[in-house]
Structures are given as structure tokens and as C-alpha cells.
Image 1: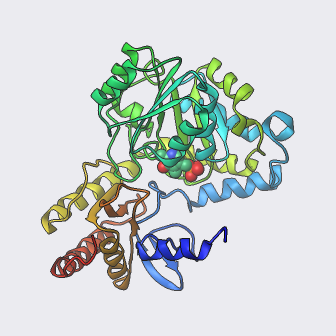
Image 2: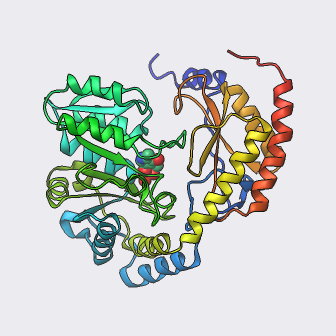
Length: 393
Ligand SMILES: *Cc1c(COP(=O)(O)O)cnc(C)c1O
């Protein structure tokens, strides 16, 4: 019989890889109701606490009152509305680039940029820990596709030596499951020697990183010459939805002309762009959010080291605790939940086999007391888990 879905699903369960969606019954924030339980959450990507900000909500309400709800058509037909255009201009200013192009999701922005820039006869080189959307984009492009060792400019260099055609080097700015930064100075230097272009997807860097929230490129002081293709997403620190690609006039016009994931889809609701204009303003202006967040991160790392947790080399709000097997990660996540904490277990294939982890994330909306509570409960649960033997491979 074809399509034996039941046994596929059963196998998934047996491997401790079955996914379930927690049902969120309140807005994003530290204190949430999930599946009927009140929990303290350390699992969203709303790093600056803007997803439920009153001014952002008001901007969206006013936007809907003024512009209606639906985008109505694709950007090239009659769906490119004034707030979309204003947001593109504001994002170009924010990133210090000639232009920016708005997308409905980061997944689509990545598919669009990679497939518009490389195709058959070209080469795309990606960090092996890149976000799934970037890997999918590389495969879809039809270019020769190769993954280099994580953050390893030497491994990239060897592949650049064999590259053919237009060559695009693609990396996350902040690795979404590890929280570490791409070694962009080294990666850009390798690419430049071989006339390759660098594309950075900084979904998790915009907002938390850089003095004004300009992300990993601001952090390293890199411009359009080093990173010609810069992608940001709006559903994380911006607290809204959508994504953008920022770059030269020619890059943006190329995407408008040739990128199918841009052309063949309805524009995002204009009110969402109104909300993002407001959240961009808050993100740029309210430095206290970044400062508070950095204090929480530093306190967590210090406390976690005292407990003996294995953290990763992350200066960002993504602070994974390495656990190992999927079963143990699920167990730790479950005992934390019994104590009122929501922290997601991240398992293969999202992360490499044997590196299942709890992905703790912080937000400027968390208080110091909430971080202390997390550390107290982690200390108890970690010690309990350490006493239990591993039962799976
Ligand atoms: C979340 C994420 C995306 C996808 O963005 P969406 O707007 O959620 O589709 C792309 N790249 C990275 C690195 C991400 O973390």
C-alpha cells in the first residue's frame, strides 16, 4: 500500500522526534497561558518585547482603519501599498543601504534572493548549520550546492577554490539554534579573494545586536561591499511579521524582476507594515531594551556556569543548554514545565544528531527576578536529571 502515514508517524514517535504544537492562549510575553497552564516562557524570538507593545498594537489598529485588511494583490499588480513603500524606505535607512524590499516571510525572502542570484552553472556555498530556508533555497536554485563546516573560513575557502560561475556564500548572521555569530570578517575576506558575493540572513541579529540594533553587520562594522545581500526578518525582534532584503539598487530591481517568491504572492497586509514602522522606531531608539537584555544574558550565563550546565558560545538572547539525546531533552523540558517553565526542546533534524538541547531565549520583557527563577529551577532539575541513567543511544 502506498502512503503508509500511520507507520511513518509511529516511527517518528519511537525516535522521540514527534512534534507537538503548544497552544498559546495569551499574547506573547514572559507570562503566558499554554494548553490551559500558566507558565513563565523562555522560548519566543520576541527578543525586545515588541510583539505585544501597546504602541505597535495601536499602529496596526490605525493602519487597518486606514488601509483595510488584505494586501489585495501582489506587489507588481496593485498590492504595493503606501505603508509597504514607507517601510522599505525606513528599512533602507536603517540598514544604510540604497534600497530594501519587503517580503511576507523570511522563508520567502531567502528563497527569492538565492534563486534570483544563482542558477544552473553557478555555485552556492552555505554554512552547514544554516537555517532550513537557506538550505532549501540553495537546493531549489539549481546551482552547485555545497555546505562548508560550521563557521570555518578554511573549509569555505577550499570550496571557493572549486566554485564555478557566479558564487554566492550564504550564512546565518546569528545561528538560530546555537546563538553564536557568523565569523563574518573571515568569511567576507575569503569570499572577496575569489570574487564571490556574501549573503547574510540576520533574522536573530537585528534588534539585539549592534549599538542601534543593526545586527551582526553593525556589530562587525561591515557594509554593502562586504555583504552585498542582507536579509532581516520582522517576526523576531521586530515583533511583527515579514522580512526584507537590503542592498544595492541593482540587487533590489533584480529581485523585483526575477524572484518568483516575490512576484507570485500577495503582499502582506498593509497594517502589518504600519506596525513594523512603529516597532522599527522603538527598536532603533530604545537602547534600554538591548542593555537590559544584555544584563539578563550575562546573569544567566554566570548562573548557568555555576550550576554546571553546558552552554554554547553565544553572546545573544539564544542560550541553548546542550543535553545530548532527544529523550533527555524532552525529559528536561517536561520537568521544567512541571515547575511552571516553558522552554522548548530542540531535536534532530533541526539540530545535528546527539546535540538535542533546550533552547532558552531571553527577551527585554523578562525581569531579573524571572531569570533568577529560571536558574533556581534549572539547578534543581538538572541535578535530578544527572542522577538518572541514559536509556537511549
Ligand atoms: C525564522 C528564520 C527565518 C524565517 O523567517 P520567517 O519570517 O519566520 O519565515 C529565516 N532565517 C532564519 C535564520 C530564521 O531564524
